[in-house]
Structures are given as C-alpha cells and as structure tokens.
Length: 185
Image (cartoon, rainbow, N blue to C red; front, side):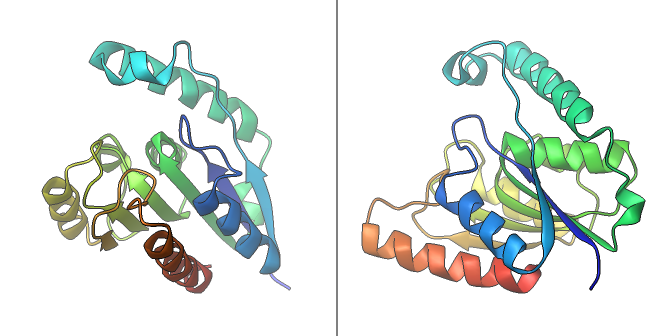
C-alpha cells in the first residue's frame, strides 16, 4: 500500500465539516490517505478582511504563518502522493505553501480567490468554480486556468459555496463534484 497524504485547507467561514471538504476528507480516508486538517485564526472577522485589501493581505500572511507552523513536522518526501484540498482562502494558502516549499502536491481547488492564481504552478490543480461566485470573477478564473493549463469545472448559477439555492440542484452538483474528486484522488 502506498503512503498518501491529503491536507485540508478550509475557508474563512467554510470549515472542514461543510459538504465540499467533509466529503473530500471521507473520500481521501476511504482511499487510505492520511488526512491532516489545518486551521487558522484570523485577526479580524471575515467581513472586515474582505472589505480592506491591506487587512486581507495581513490576514493571509497571518494564516500562512499558522499553516507553516502546523505542517512543519511533516516530511512530505515520505509520501508517494500528496494532495492539497482547499476552499476559498485555503486554496491560496495551499498554493502558496506548495510553491514556497517546492512541493509537488496535486491540488483540488474549491472556489479559488484571485490570490490563488499568484501562487499556483501550471498544470498542478483541478479547479471548481461557480459562475455566480462574487469573490472570483468567472472570466478571470477561466482565463487564468487556461493560461496555467489547469483543468476546471464551472458550475452554472453556483455561488462561493458552489450552491445555487435550489437544494435538488445543489445535491446533484455535489454528487458530480465528489465523483470527480474521487477520481482525482
């Protein structure tokens, strides 16, 4: 059996017990991945951070320091496969960590933020984006994914949680997304 690691990077308000990350953890665990969940405490509420670019970058740096501290004892070279699974700010933190420490982790990217694309390496991720996501412009997202040769799925009418407001559609979309995650793992 190969040694595999999945590191979960949550969003500010989207913790690891919400559907996208919860089921991703379950799938990884079922495929014999060791699962590590990182946590970060931001200096101010998400609503304050989202409204101020300087505070947003300070919060991002603070969260990155916390992630680095939590992952410092992991010897990534001991694993045959490493997958970073991120949501929102977690996608940017995962990409930054991967780039900073020159890892070759595969990335499952749920609802990236613009900052994610500043750190991600070409061809290393699979992006899930909703075209009604107010935190990441769809045209920008798809253009950057194309430029970086990232595979992506755009979910029509879906917001930053990949939800449309129609429960039946959301459950169907979640099922399709998790089927793709299962294949990626």
